[in-house]
Image 1 (cartoon, rainbow, N blue to C red):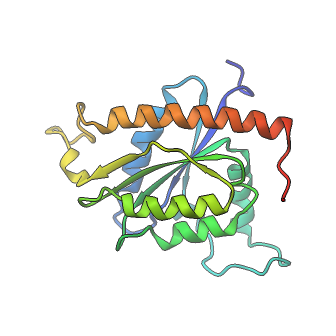
Image 2: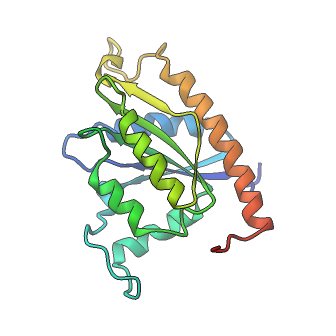
Length: 196
C-alpha cells in the first residue's frame, strides 16, 4: 500500500500528570493500530507538547508550541484520544489542547480510549463526545473503556492481559475509525470543508 494511501492516525495522550498511566495505554493501542497496513500512527504526548494554558486572542499569533503541534494534527485523517477520568471528567490539559485548534479537528473522526476506576473513564468520554461534535468532528460509536485498569496486569508484569476484552474492543474501534477516516478523507478531497 502506497504511503499516500495510508490513513494517518494521531493517538493523543491526554494526561500530563506525574506518574500517569496514559503512555502505557497509548502505546498498547498504538501497537494494535500499527499492525494494520492501512494505518500510519503518530503518538502525540501532551506532556511533551507543553501547550500553554493561556489562550491567545483570535487575531494574535499562537505560541511556538501551538504552531509546532498544528501540522501533526492537520496531517491526521483521524484521532484517538487516550484519557483518564478525573472527578467524572477529563484532564484540563486535554481541554486546553482541544481549544487551541479548530480546523485541524473538522470533518475527521475521533475515537476514545479511556481508563479509570469502575466507570472506565466513560464520564470523560461522554463530555468529549459533546465537545468534538461542536468542533464538527465525528465521534465514532465504539470505544475502549478500561475500568479498574490495574487489574489487567498479567503475572509477568505485562499489560494488558492476553485474554482481556480490551483487545477485541480495540479491534472494533479501529475498524470504525478506519472506515470513517477513509470516508471523511475522500469527502474532504471531493468537497473541501467550508464554514457554513
